[in-house]
Image (cartoon, rainbow, N blue to C red; front, side, top):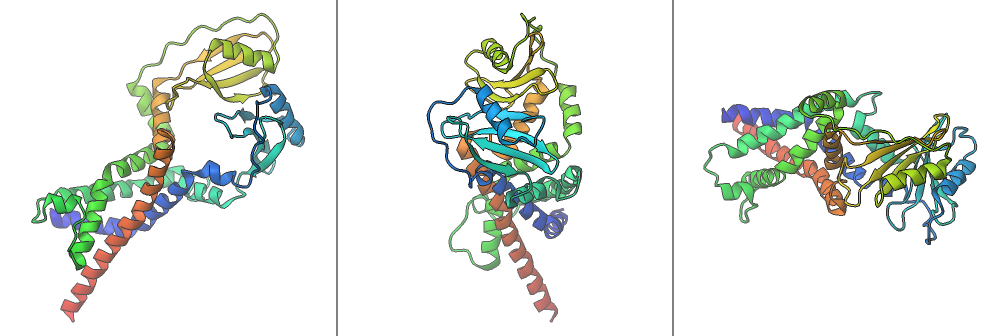
Length: 349
């Protein structure tokens, strides 16, 4: 059995190791994708922010070719952040970043215009249109590679558990490579399994959603609140803020042609999936709050754990280190295979 596991682990590594390395490196880059995308922007001047409707108007005026105006705006969530307005143009998506204090345009980010976007598409769909499922299927042998490695490491052996889990000084040659490969893999196994498992869930969103809805129950929704008459963007925002006092606005969809303003608010102690969507009809002022479904909250945790956004900067740094691990594991594994292959050739000669 150990012989079979060893061969399975070896050939899965040789066949899909490069793919695992590519996933890791592109994932490591994506952990800091917002900073990489906006590294060319000028810094905000600082000071109190303008009212949100004024910033929405400034963004729309700065890009008049987008006749529908911004599709979604993102106010700054922390000091030093910009106000972002997302547009859809014939040539693709673009985002304008404005100084919250002055409304001045600090720069523009067009989707596909940077190398980080290439890394994102490689990680998500391998540059294949609607290739997320294909990437998901390629993730299955990577999961098998990790599980086979775990089974091999746990298999009874003359090698002590201390040597399997911790790097041991004084070893030489193949035993040194095996020690480094096994110890590194075992210590990083749990976060690697989380990364691969959540990646599979994100690659098959419909299947994941179906499964989550089967095991969770819908949250009772509060009744809509009737309005007192027409409201503009500022009035809709005021109604929504009154309905969720102390919460922060995460994003807002201006009314456009829909006749409604849609906003997402996050509580002071924000966790993935905790945001609530508030909709205000501009014609009547009627307000509706959509509480998150438990299935949606779980799916949001999958996304946050995979992207490194659940636990702040430390989590993002961990994702970067995890992204580099397949390269190190692949190097040690390939070196082990090459030494064994060379030894077999020497015996035959």
